[in-house]
Image (cartoon, rainbow, N blue to C red; front, side):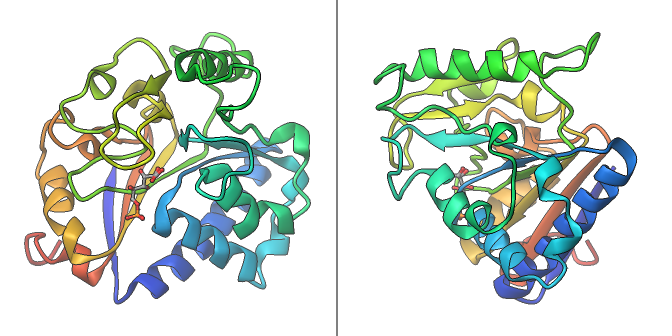
Length: 252
Ligand code: 6PG
């Protein structure tokens, strides 16, 4: 099921998405005991985490029972301010009592894999596989909510148009090279891994995103608009501000 929700501003989108995320985590914990979320980078994704931190409802989540993964990572040294992990920790994770054993960052470029992003990606695939439920059709754990942003040319996570990475049909995690959005080297979940999530939330703002948003929702091919391939098993939610929704058919 795909749903589009348009908020009047980016600030309202971030606050409303934060409230929605808190509720989704609480509901997942009520059902499964443990909730799992896949984080993303970018202004919108990090802005939502900041709003979760500021929310008076954040304490409703049993943070020690939340599994945290990343949908993509900028392959930079540990602690680099541009890393999605660094920004997520500053925005939220350092302010709530998560269990460090349940927080699964993608490797930095100065870690045990050195500068080898492909080895780091393969290792993350092993981390996901080790937590996969038995007899699932793809070797990733249950992802209750997978957060994504959308780029001006339609990229999502670190999957960019017309690349071998957006076409990847077997591996769950890939090292990504020569990215148009700096830094050039990244690690990313692939579309099959993204599509294993129960819910995928694509969150974006700004007039520059209106075209890829409209194209994705009109059924563009993922090779052309990778965000078009970001679908959840149970729900795909597009959370937009008014300017990112300007090219949608009226009444969307
Ligand atoms: C990253 C993100 C990337 C981001 C989009 C949108 O590492 O940059 O994973 O996919 O979500 O580029 O970014 P904005 O929300 O800042 O437009």
